[in-house]
Length: 488
Ligand code: NAD
Image 1 (spheres, rainbow, N blue to C red):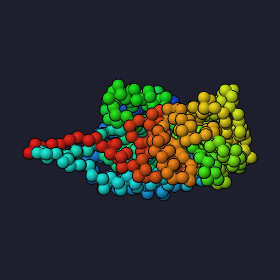
Image 2: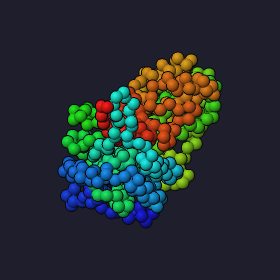
Image 3: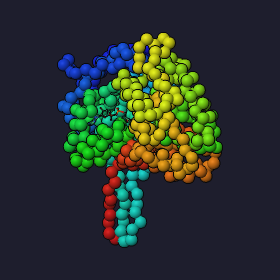
Image 4: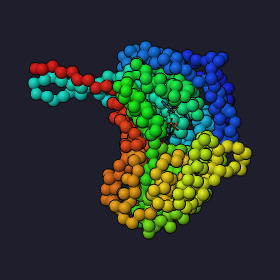
């Protein structure tokens, strides 16, 4: 373990409010577990509702000065934060790997650099995008003028704590809002490390606040706070509905980025090697704990056997091990609870008649005596099966076959999730037609899990409401439009 990681993990950790660390002797504690070893790696003090209130007050007080800065000045702060992340690249990658169990290859190759890019993208975008739009109306001088909302609250899940943090808060900060963040109880470490970097980079006090603790206390208080001007929630569809209802009751605008159960349609003319490589990678990336991954593999009946052979060969070859080992292809599940959820789904799916083409098993990879490890699984059966219909959130997929395009589309649309789907075919006319017709926020061609700044990413139906991330639209989401008009 790096010296900086050790120093951070052994330091007192709790909420970060108005550039102060709030630490108390009598605070309730969340023990943070390394899922590769099941050892406690840090203790985080849980915040209280009073802390949430203090954080909102601090953010509210910081708002006038932060929003009055020029876009260039705010962009300067965001670039300094990006510099700080780059200077601490190895440490934050290691912290994220230890907290979530994800591989160091992924945190160094994807999570951390993509987060740095997020800061730079929105910093630069905010300097170029206009906040005012002139309106062409007869006998009137009129325009839309956009202003930041004020205090924005963010509630995050445990699977991509660092990436989702940045995807969420950066556009809000760039637009001139101040933020209060509630990380997941299970994986708060990279968020707290980021707060330390913000403190060291002299982000003005109160602009960024983190309150640790449970959803039922901190998250709920956030959605009921009278000074909260906007809420963004990323997490399960079930909790998203509750948060949408609470925010709606308080007339707080709310963005919901929710769960998924992505479909991949593999046509008979698809490059089967590519499809097998993309889809095996989709369910092993972050040990399948990915909202937008493809877990319903809808394959043309004429190529199903060949595809199954290729994809199971790839899945069997994935090296499972400790996230910090450079050659590990897949780490453990993030928690024993999540591993048990996957085990339960596999049992229920088979009890309902599914067949295991590849059985998922709890295991101990060489050199790992403990840890929440599990091998990938692939079930097959009919589309009424629980494992076809519900989000499992693990390294598990469900294969069905189809006869023609209409049959494939019927299967895609047999459930209500609408986050991310993909289509594999060499016929680009068909690829674009199918992609256009799939009801999801993101539809990918001959690939799965495609992300870029400038490419909006969000969900529809059970997968989300009101926004998305990573694009100019996300920046405008954090600016409230108002009109200014003068009759001539
Ligand atoms: P979750 O819904 O259980 O919890 C998410 C967050 O909400 C946590 O911080 C939790 O403490 C908080 N929370 C729980 N109950 C609350 C309440 N009543 N009021 C306010 N806050 C509350 O989700 P999870 O298990 O942490 O994450 C997994 C889920 O997140 C999956 O469904 C996954 O698909 C989804 N997800 C979606 C996206 C996306 O971009 N669409 C990204 C990542 C994860």
